[in-house]
Amino acid sequence: MPRPLKGMFRRGRSWYSRLYDGGQERWICLGPDLGEACRRFRRIKRGDQPASGLSVNQAAVRWLETYIAVARSDKNVGTAKYRVERYLGKKLGYKLLSSVRPDDIRLYRIWLEKQGVSIQTVAHILSDCRCFFLWCEDSGLIDKTPFRRKMMPRIQEKPPARLSDEEVETLILLQEPYGFVIRFGLSTGLRWGEMARAQVADIQKGKLTVSQTKTGKVRRVPLPVEICAELRGRIGKVIPFGEKSSGAFARMVRRLSGIRDFRCHRLRHTYACRWLEQGGGIAALQQILGHSTIVTTQRYGKLSDDAVEREVGRVFSVQTVAKTVAKNSSCVNVGSIRLTQPPVTE
Image (cartoon, rainbow, N blue to C red; front, side, top):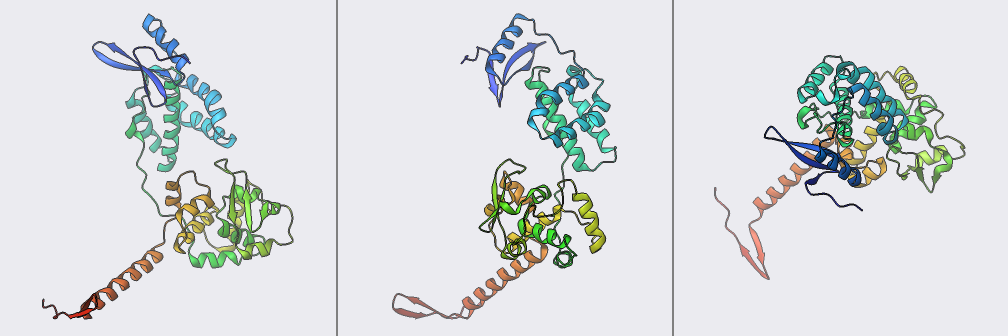
């Protein structure tokens, strides 16, 4: 394994070298591979390191073909390609990659916010932009990414989009198969794609084995007795809907129930909130939902206002009882001797 040359240093996953131009220090990224970094460092020392003449559009095509094609799923590959064509290429595609400055990224964000998309969508598009310029830096196409830390918009946290108890009662009584799908989603917390792929044969001893997951990890989800009873005698798929039919399913449920803001993912939010409200642990909830970090689980599963009020009432009642007992008590026991205390005067 090659050793780093004098003048090279590592920051994060990549190797860098320093150059001084006009009295100013400039870092040049040499990439994450040490062998290639040493070869690039020698070329820089010889002075034959050419500047990249690629445009943003040309570099973005390389990014899609080399990095995105192997790092993301087919669906997310299509999403990244659409964002490049619709936004990044339209606003910055004509510029030379080496000429993009931080102010260009700031103007890009301002332009995105005027396109009529939500602030969350702006954050997703900028996240792809940040990934693109980091890849350009690691690949040696630019010395340093122009994307700075504070360029991402600040997203105001929203409460989980759970269903109320009244909405749940309405939904579980819908005609079949819609009512069963609602009950199954509320009892498992599965994503729509996981529900659509679930097979009755995957259920063993009251647990559903979910193999094709978002994180790529197999997990086992416990099923309530009532759901197991409804599935008894069935074969094949658990629900009679495909992976791409979530929109049609949600539209039909809205039509049947009158709940205008129903979406399939709200079943998952409701499951997480109810789990915590009933005393379930957040670590177990993370495993059931299949989140890679517990931070995501904390964002999904938050107590409702009613649950918080009940908990506050319980704590206050305990405190009141404790104060009453302390105030009425005028005696303490020390060993086997009973000492009488005079009442406290305020």
